[in-house]
Length: 217
Image (cartoon, rainbow, N blue to C red):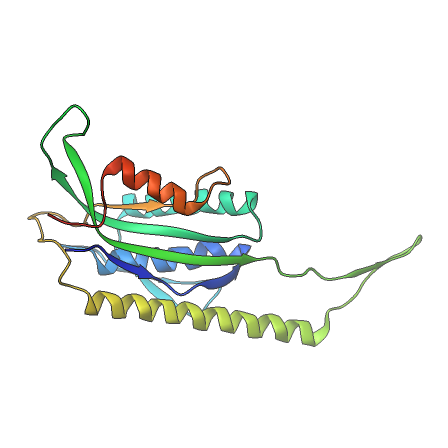
């Protein structure tokens, strides 16, 4: 069965919004693919009027936080570039050992691509002279502009959440059988590399290293 791929709608966000947006999206995906007993925890976003659900697993939260930290560091080194995070679910399969292969391989059955366009919001202008520095008040128009932009980002984030829910409800046949006692499917979160190489090339290298990710045996 082919690996199902979901390309989420691109979100245009500012730097300070990255963490909350990614926390909301990644935890929502993992929660909807969780197995067994979880302890659902409602989380209210501080920047947007949105509540999402976490699984209540400390180790999972730490791993997602760590990946978001790495992603934010990458964004700071590569400003004004569109970027992508890939959340993949996979099975670990044993294969015939040989001189050229490992004894196990990862067979990817679902991949989620989170697409962000991190923008730089223009700062307030200042008027300088030799004697004084006057800060020009952006006025109500600038405040309204930011409020309007924030509402647009919130609406777009809601669309992404609905896209996730629609996908998990419609795409079920490819999900592998559930193993007894397992709470989470094996997963990995891939971010752009620390170098300036293309994310797509990083994914190809990882696929070649771990084996073909698009087919399940």
